[in-house]
Image (cartoon, rainbow, N blue to C red; front, side, top):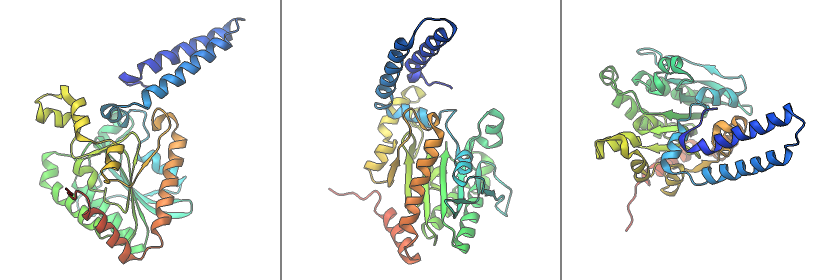
Length: 317
């Protein structure tokens, strides 16, 4: 297990607990009470740290190397029924954007999301979860296929942003994202969006327009990352904590401003502390959303989605 800076007090207590248990096993000394005291203190420390997280600490948790990524979510949600589909039928297959068909609780879904990679080699292969235009065009192709066969769409967002390279711009990165937003607004099947990690800028919005938009508790959703915001405003990355607070990017801020529908609770310490519980909770929220949307007619579905996004950013004195 890897620990973040603010989690070091937890690491120290866990090390103490391990040593205490080891002494008990290797000698005849009764250390039960000592272990219980350390366990109690550990639980209290965890609650104290995780119940009072700052915006920057939530950003750090969303990037935790042990946090489950899109492919792991999909594999556990679909329980072996996932069939991955490839290519945008125009340029090539983008490894940063994955998509395909799968069943959750007996219901077929088209699942689409950004995949970051679990180690250095995989991250390079997946381009760190930064999709190129062909990735967004692949996502749109799969959404249109789902629409054709009346299959609801699930999108899982976890990206530091769309790839900003020269070749991406040459192939129309802005147009690809804009086209996705336009087409998703009028897609004739239910769309359920879950932000499972980082939700940065247009890279997230390219697959982020949904009838229901959920955020896992320790994730963020914003037009810019705190580091980039800090470097623009203060010409330095040193003020990223201040930038994170000012951006109002946490799940609670997003819910308060009515930009998302609900927050999906995570286990104490983050999604990586209890993966199974996280997958189960995400599945419950997805099925709840689907059951709310499946009875709506196509006209009602599209009208409600349009109305939802039209109301965002309204200014009232």
